[in-house]
Length: 107
Image 1 (spheres, one colour):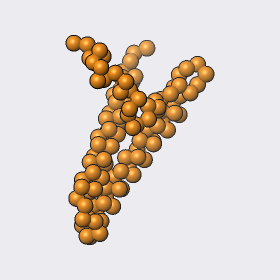
Image 2: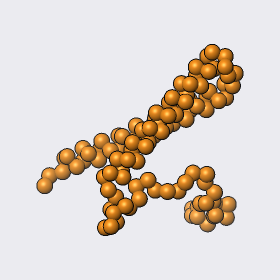
Image 3: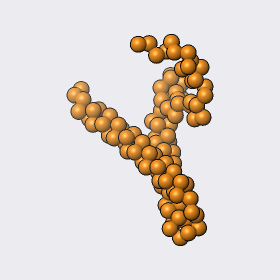
Image 4: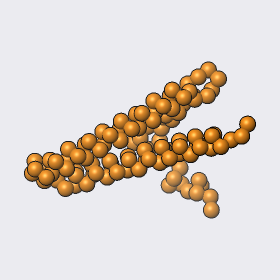
């Protein structure tokens, strides 16, 4: 079944509220991705995960002390932190697996 021919799906590429910028864009003259840009992207991901975790902790404290009575906001903050952490761990696992693959290559 060819899903690209469905009329409801066509034209939805630009609807996303998330930027479609590739974090690993080619940034050297020969069209390769530099290690520095990959490392910077990974560090931004870690900082964003830490920010979500801190926001969830602040929301937990606000809810526990009675400053906020919105359980909805608390659950959203916790879910954002959880998903962000899972994504960061998945990226880390992929990087470690790539490193192991490189180390196991015989030259």
